[in-house]
Length: 185
Image (cartoon, rainbow, N blue to C red; front, side, top):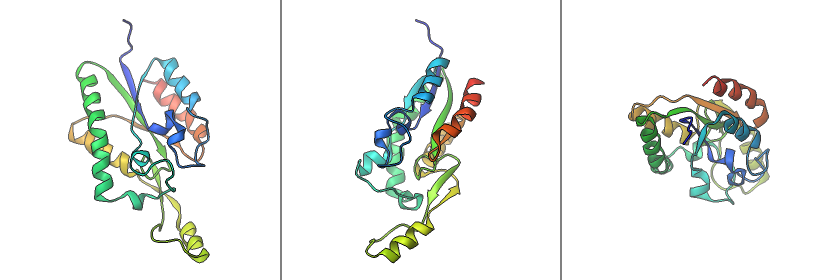
């Protein structure tokens, strides 16, 4: 059987936009332009789990990194990543190349280069609090919690895999950069 023996890991919502917080997806279902690039290159895909969807469901509100940055969420992310790391290690042990991991910049969980930060928390009971909370929202340099845990886990098992990112606010603007980097593999 003909195999290219190249695999890429992608954040869940790239292949299933239905897992995103309502209103955040810029594409229907699958980010097909990205998927077509990977398929044309003959690269296999491992879809990462969506910790936000698994833990908080489809009706969750948008969150910021500070809300997920707690011991429970981090432990759950590691539990979700354990079978992924085992698969990746097995592939590598048998001569496969993991060409990269693609995250979603802007996500409090899956951001690679930047993530959403803010002074969220408590009850939203009057409009003055809502305005103050919304004013505190910003994108900051750094990874989301899930990606941080993935990076730590990879380091613990001595694996170095490049990370790429799709900008959550403009998914199409990131495509050319990712194409050039992946095409080089």
